[in-house]
Length: 344
Image 1 (cartoon, one colour):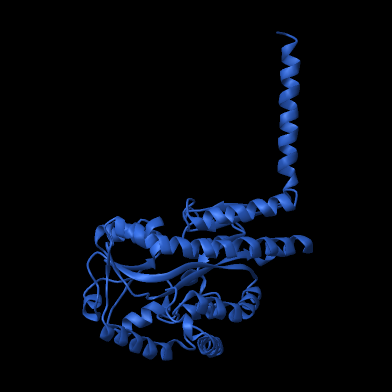
Image 2 (cartoon, rainbow, N blue to C red; image 1 turned 135 degrees about the horizontal axis):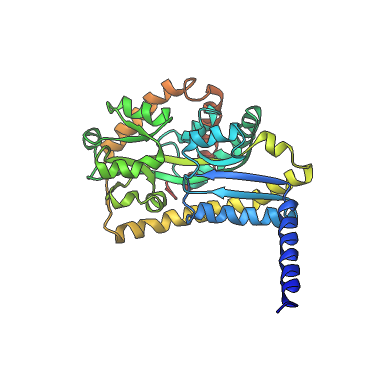
């Protein structure tokens, strides 16, 4: 037994040395906040991106994700980035749009008819958005997607009248949805995303907006059992890194991070879209009813959108980014008339 103690001590010492060596090897640690639940396709795909970066930098660059909103909402995560508690985050456009207002432009309601339109416009706007984030000392690693979003309610909403009689939620810091609903004569309740489910349960709100998959992962469908079967708009976000932290990386590692993102986040896009498509059947199987709207309701909503946009140009985003968006959209529709309404 006495001879065993030196052997045990030596083994423990070796383990400690190896452990400390592995920890010391990490030179650049990026702590990332996200509202996405850890079980979601968004968080799972991010982990694959993080693993590749760690392996290809021999452990020198690591990403640690804090999923499920444990770091607070978008505003809280951004504040933590500014003081160095976080080095990055996954942000919804409504949460980070105040920093780069032009990011909001694709969130105009009833703007897109298909994902093909979304992809074309995104590609055209991306260089400008990357530069605008860099001016704010933020590195845009990838645009992320929630998908086409729908009005979801505790009661059927198939007309303007029904929408007006419900209590509508909008995300805090979302001037676009607020402006449209105000045009319709509706005063929405502004809440951060983590507060929505409890507010549905308490009856503070009864109509919310989310993608089909998002309503499942956030469990909103358990209360909002009626979905208006017409896309309200397109929801998306960004994966950002603090510019100062990113700037400390050697050039080869900066390129590697962007290359890994270019590999993994398009896959995330595909998985998100697939999840949204599959979610329709899951929701129906769980007792959710899809409510149709008539042509007159659709017309009124689009007319209200057009009136609202006039007020949003300059106040919510720049005239230049709006004109560029419309130009790209018209370009695509002219060259691909067969795509209209294909995916949404």
